[in-house]
Image 1 (tube, rainbow, N blue to C red):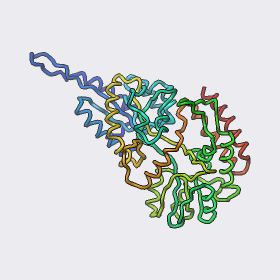
Image 2: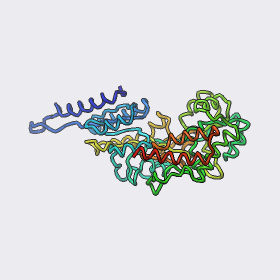
Image 3: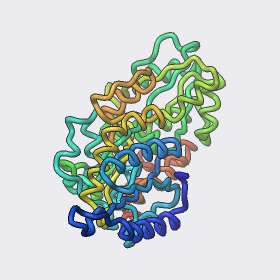
Image 4: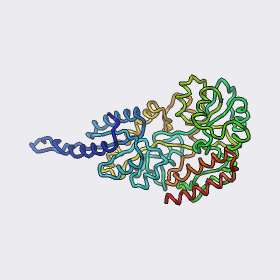
Amino acid sequence: MVKRSKLLAVLIAGIIATTSLVGCGGKDEKGGTANTEKKTLTVWSHFTTNEVKEFEKVAKAWGEENNVEVSVVEDQGKFQEMIQACQSDNGPDLILGAPHDNLGTFQKAGITAEVPSGMVSADKYTSQGIVDAVTIGGKVYAVPFAQETTGMFYNKDKVKEVPKTMEDLVAMAKEVGFEYNINDFFFSYAFLSAGGGYVYKNNNGTLDPSDIGLGNEGAVAGLQFISDLVNKDKLMAADITGDIAKGDFTSGKSAFYFSGPWDVSGAKEAGLNFGVVPMPTLNGKAPQTFLGVQTSFVNENSKNKDLAWKLMEEFVNKGQDIVYKTGSRIPVSKDYVVDDEYTKAFMEQAKVAMPMPNIVEVQAMWEPAANNLKLLTSGQIDAKTAGENIVNQVKEGIKQIK
């Protein structure tokens, strides 16, 4: 079985490490005992069950070729528990499928080994953002495997000409409908970024949490656009949820919907005649949707880091097929060829997407943004106040983290 509890996995790793030293000596040509000790590696994965099974096949085949006992464990537990395990003597050597916005927390906890030079470089990937997602303070701490961002879904039976601008989208939507999870900052950030808003200033690969751009002129303009969608254009309710928006789109009630690749299968199952395209421009500029990257890293506390990096290379070589064909994820390699129109559309949008902050201060962003979006869309505050509130509350949140 691939799926085991984390505690059991740690115990098993310890047993394997012990028993691998016993009874594995052979006779050399002179009758002595040859050193044929079999090394061990433990991998924990946060990918889906089916993906973990495929990575396990890769690990087992590689292990047989290299005389290494590899244990692959599906880990669906809390990241804090994973951190504690990585800090223990019998923790995992390698972590697969960790979201990049948690990387700063892992790095601060001392469990991410710096990636060897040359393993991660911008010329290998579909955008610089993918490298930025795994870089903290100018150093690379993880290897990218898959990416995700949002795009525009549209009903082909209701939309004859796909709008190229948000302004055209709003005009068309008054006739055919448009909804999305508007109070979720992951989806609405794109409108703030289109005018020059940002979360934390990026200074040549280093994020500065003291410089918050969620209340600047461009961000306020984006917040005003969000408010207008509800309060002026009346396109959706202030309390709309993601499930309601998705249900209205897949049922044909609304013709436009903003979401990510995780909703493609649901639209297919609904029998909807739909397409996906990159986000329309706002005020002539491309919205920078949030980019999420699924990464993998070697535990800094592993006793077999060099061996773990060799296994990582094998996962990289075989992993794009697994995440795309088994996990229905967006590959990160620029040389990987995808064969469906939906993934191609998300890959195009991902080229201009902005990685979610990967430093620990990202924790201070989500709640203030969500709370003020709700106040904004319900008409309780205006766009300028929403921006000011978000910035001030994020600053307070950062103080609590430190």
